[in-house]
Image 1 (cartoon, rainbow, N blue to C red):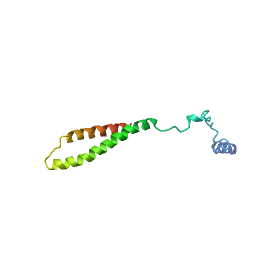
Image 2 (tube, one colour):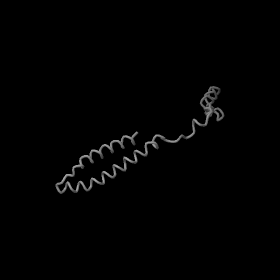
Image 3 (spheres, rainbow, N blue to C red):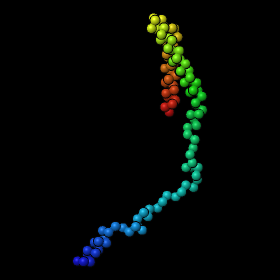
Image 4 (cartoon, one colour):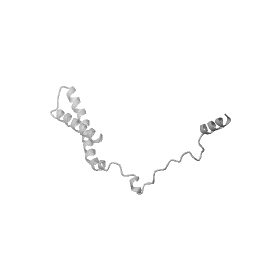
Length: 101
């Protein structure tokens, strides 16, 4: 019976520290360029100039719309107000689509 108890204690005892963590480690990358940081989104730089122009146009149109709205409050609708609104809508949709990619 005592031998059975000793055998049971040996079987249930924790594994020795030398036997732990013997998992193989993955090999190092042969080429460091695979892990090197790459410039982020180079296509954004090439698209930035037209986007900036469109954003500036959108700003100018929205600022000019302020005086048009004052005229509308006095019962006068400038003839280009509707066209400005359409252009603002078009520019904002385009900018949202380009920046959302």
